[in-house]
Image 1 (cartoon, one colour):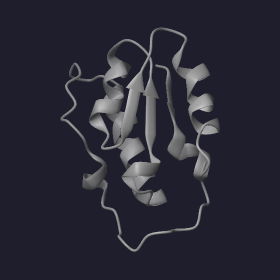
Image 2 (image 1 turned 30 degrees about the vertical axis):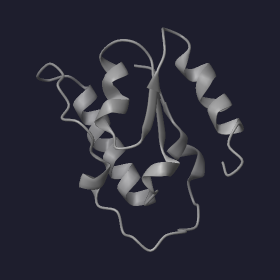
Image 3 (image 1 turned 180 degrees about the vertical axis):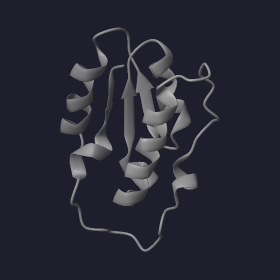
Image 4 (image 1 turned 135 degrees about the vertical axis):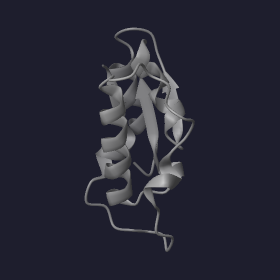
Length: 102
């Protein structure tokens, strides 16, 4: 699974907002993978990380490749995009570099 997220680049940031985000606020569409798929565990862990970091939705970008993992951005209440094989990881750092606040 190829997956990257801009949220992981801001560990240890100072909270700039007053709203406390709950894990359910980061959930997007209902995940529909095959029963027993490991992607469910990855998604659940990702929600926990987002809840711990308390990032506002507009500061999160999920970038995924092709395959079952490409649906990942749709399951997270954030900005998201998916690319063809091998293009997700090269694109993610460029996305961050283009943001003045990143």
